Structure formats: C-alpha cells, structure tokens
Length: 234
Image (cartoon, rainbow, N blue to C red; front, top):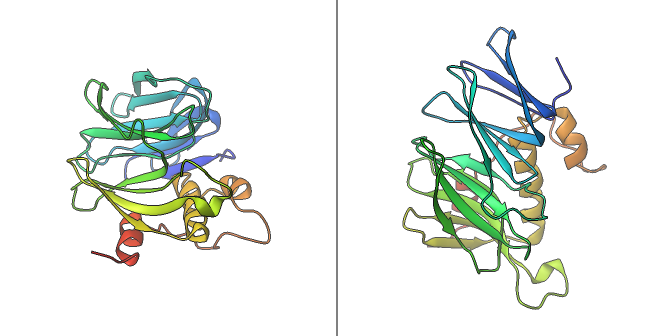
C-alpha cells in the first residue's frame, strides 16, 4: 500500500490520495483507476447517495469523479481564485444533491459555497463581507442543514484569544446559530477534524500533531453535531 496522505473506504471502494494522484481500489484492494490532473489534492469525499467522489486541492480546484464509470465528471476552479491555501473542509449534503465547500479568501475570511451535484454549478454563496473564518463543515444527521467549526475575527485583534471561536448549526434558510468554544477546544477540534478528513492516516497525523501531543492510538470521529449539543444553550 502506498504512503497516502488520505485514505477512505466505503462498502464499494477505497480511495487513496498522494497529493498528485488519486487511486481507486475495490474492496479486495485491486486498483481500478488512477486519476491525475490536480496538485496538492489531499481531501477525498464519497457522496452518500450516489457513486460520486469529490477531491479537494489546496489550490483553488475541486474535481468530481463518477465511480460507476471511473471517469472525471467535472474539474472546477473556484469562482474567486486567490492566493490563499484552500485547506478548509467540505462535505456533501446528506441527500447527496449538493456539495458544500469552505472557500478561504484573500481578506482572510471564508465563504460557504454550495454546488449542485448534477451540473456542478454554484447555487449559493454565504457570509461574503462578514468576518467569519470557517474551518470544517458536516451535514446534520437529520439532513436539516449542517454544522460548522470556525471563529469570528474582530476588527481589532491583539492575540488569538480575541477571536470568538464557535461551533454552529446552519439552517437550510441560512440562519446561523453559534455556541461558544474556548480557543483551546477550537484548535483541538481543528486538528482532529483535519486528521479525520484524511481517514486517520499515519502520514497526516505526523503533520497535524506536534509532540508531545500525540494522536489517540484508536482514532474516533467526533461529529460537530455532538460538539454543538455538548456546548449547550437554547
């Protein structure tokens, strides 16, 4: 097995990312395809309702592949390409009809961008002009909106403690309900989420966790939905 940055599996496929190439395997480990064409492509995601694979690069590119036919469906340049590394999270909605990408901007804030998974056209762009920095996004278990991990940067900041760190629920109508987190908890979750998106690979852990802070020998996903519930409030 190659030394992948990311490696994920479902009941039909396994996908490994080296950064320059995306390998697709069957459940027995036989290579089915190798996709190239993106640089710094580290984040793979399966669509929950159709044989669709999304790949996110830290450059301003997304790619979508049909796993039924092992073909490229769409290579998509972000609408507002910029000089910032696109290393924030992304997810499919629970019904698989949309893909949500967190897009980092030159003013060091984030936009949440929604694409449909048929034509891969931009359907919505949220939080433009606001001071939000969004790190990770996950669909709600009931399919009603999604959960976000991020922070709001004040106009004047002297240290990272001045940021308002939060976990939030975003409704389908665009309403954002935030619950406060400590800076320590935010950065702990950010490291865990980065590792989780990789499929908990050892290679990603080496770059995500700094000794003496070592990752758990038995990695476990921590859903943002559970973090939101634990944060309390109405």
